[in-house]
Amino acid sequence: MAAQAPVVRAGWGESFEALMGRVAGCFPRRETRLTCRNMVQGLVMVKGSANCWSLAEAIGHTGPHVLQHFLSRARFDTEAIRRSADAWTVEQLGDREVMLVVDETGDEKSSLDAVGAARQYSGALGGIGLCQVAVHLSYVSAAGHALIDRRLYLGEPWAAADERRELTGVPDETAFATKPQLASAMLAEAHASGIRTAWVAADEVYGGRELRRRIRSVGYGYAITVPTSHHVTTPGGGKIKVTALPERVPKRAWMRLKTGHGTKGARLYDWAMINVHPDDTPPGQAAGHSQTLIRRHRRTGSLSFYRTWHPDPQPISVLVSTVCRRWRVEEDFQGAKGLAHLDEGQVTCWTSWYRWSLMSVLAYALLAVGALQQRRHTTPADPDDDLAMVPVSPHELHALIRAFALPRPRQDAVSDRTRFRVGADHRAGAHRRSGST
Image (cartoon, rainbow, N blue to C red; front, top):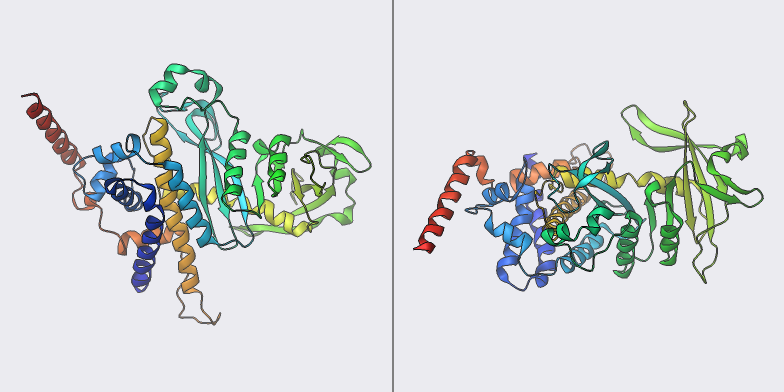
């Protein structure tokens, strides 16, 4: 590990300065620009639970007030920073074999005070629970992947509750939007930013006709899971449920393809592809090539179904690869939460949520890009070179950066957080008393 220290230190410093330089112009004041740098570093430095208290302690602030002001009241354009950061991330990850993956994740909450918090379904919680839910967009290329956008989901009761909206600072122009509508807005922004050629992948929540038509209207192909209740129209068989399709597949038409690697080796499934009539063609656009993809478990026979579309004919191997690469977003969720504290903000208001999530996205992008750079650096010219360094994952890079590239968090040296907070409270009380006299 020590042998990699100079490479890690140099790589982190170069990437960090490049990203911070890219977003610097979005801050009208030097102080907020510096706080952004400190917060992104702090999110990588803090190993345990992260909030404004623990981040302030880690980066050497006397209390959480600067970070709290930065998240809630400081004047800067949050989304301009995201757009600048996204452009940097996309440049680093490259434009080969690009996918945009839509998915949602939930963050458990202890009360209804947090903006958008409600009893609702979240796959991350394994069912219905009190949580915030956000729809995210992940950029996936042949080189790597990272989150690039997010939208907080406000359920209809929340969107209609004027008092709660006012208390949490929800903008007046923000109306109720379904999760597919949130996804559509992010895809439109991605296209406007210059991501022109891509596949879009998503689970069955996003398989409705409206979103599929929107995806096609901006020129993207798609591979989206659909439920067993989904209907398609075949060239010669009329409109039928997808569950009736497997019996129409000749035995010889099934193909056994690898979908990834598990603990027991390669994961193999049987796959079949059936052409269907597109039901989502935007006005003035050619029909293109629409299929239903069927996945069958080799032992249990359980089935999954996917709608795919592309302007050009695609072999089944490409469609299967696209479906399987959707899981990169799950890796991004795990990394952004586990390494960059995406789900630990303890913020209650609209602006604070968007800014905390943005800082987490920036921190995780640095780790994802850093891991890519490490892989490039450690890939030997000779595949048989036994002395070449082993490439690192974002999790391993996180440990290396904390060890070799960042200052030691203050709470590692002073572990008594109670003393830190008592001191901060004492100073705040003294300030109030002096102000009242």
